[in-house]
Image (tube, rainbow, N blue to C red; front, top):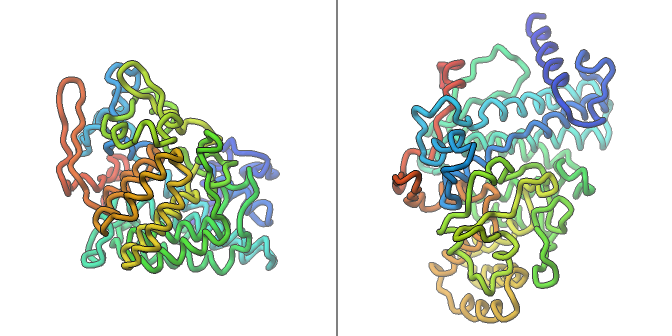
Length: 439
């Protein structure tokens, strides 16, 4: 009874403070344990709405940005920018550890209770399947923030994050290994596959998981595990549902927009407005583009004196978690790792044909077809850097590939993240460690 009472109080508090939408108009608001399809949908909608914007903070740690030392918000971000994790300023933004577990709490309510209280139906299956998928994504993000990068040889002993699969608020939150967390992620995606029955979501509801979004998540997870065939298979299943690409030769349009033909899951903003105002594109990021042939450059960047502001992100209509571009680039990388250079070249050329001027593509087509495996790998990774600028991919890509050295100049000093630096794994926030000595 004590645990149920705690659950009621937590659910009441969570629903009372949300400002979501009509899906949360439960009567009486915030004072019921969900019993109906509509009420459980409201719970999961709250989980979606509370998904944090942690990817914007990881972007600060990469080679994509420089920090404006004259910004009013500089003190919020400077310790993240300089990788000062062990003793940050008290006003430094925390990485959203608790917020991700808050999302997991909502998914656990749906996963553990909805099947007991709602009659079997396609709608119920879709709802519970989405909860499994959202929980899998939250754990993937948690382990890639606070756990070591996946390494098959050491994953069983590498420290990951706590695993919470029940509503029990009194359980001990003890970190599990990276392998245990990845196994749970895959188990959740497999359960979701059995239940999700919508190939895609309609625009406006595409913050919710569908089959194409689930396959995209699976492809990303397997890419990080270097399970190339599984990553390729999942990408192909997603592309069988949506293989559309925005052709920048025809229209100068952000492919990240929720109503873009590329949009698969529109849940996260990788470059929030407050951060946009405090940063510029780094010289390294600007130098990554062919400024005359690459049609993304004038779309993504705006000159500001001798520097460049980034125009992507910062708006609700640009929330983007998965889009088809990622599937093409994952397919190209996985095909090459499977020694199928022909398919890798065909896939990457199909993609870049939509991103470069006609003359620029003709030149690249010749170059790509002449590339050896090493050069092609580097080109695919460079295309990921260009395509996904400030979308939150870069930190994950650096962690799973070369963990290169990064140098950040700030206020007359330079700060260095050396190659394979332990700070490629973020330590738990101080508030989390204070509340849970097991961390």
